[in-house]
Length: 176
Image (tube, rainbow, N blue to C red; front, side, top):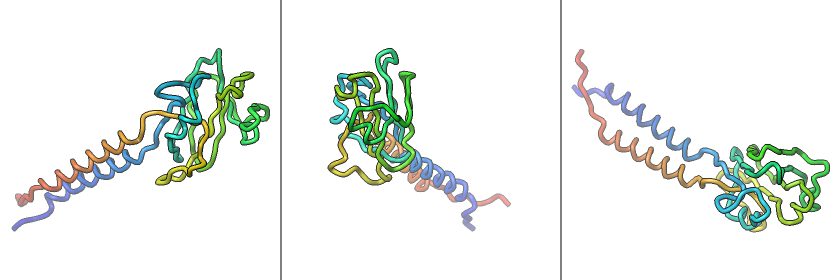
């Protein structure tokens, strides 16, 4: 008599691998603003940089800079347009500031030092629902880091491993 009891642990392990792979593939991304060619500085073209990024809830952006030379100020849309850090939402000054993008919407950041924002040191980050990408007018300065494609490759490998385990599952007769 052939039993499926021995298959249960193998199937459970395979299912766990598939779930882990899918979760890893869907993991949030962390972007370093201006990377890989720049940082939070006056040389980086943030409008061009952000055009290549799609931000989703759960992602994070990291501002890396010299705190003696710059800061990061989150402002309203009006503050962004006027390059004004008056009435800011929040300010960061560590030189390695991580900002969580928790919800769908647009966030605005600029350097609050005199003349820096007017020289282009500002970004607009459009956070869109997972599974979507920004519209054609969603341009503005934003952030960067390792693309989520690496996660997808790892997720695919995990799914392939789980499928292989299921294919090689051995049915064993119990000893009782």
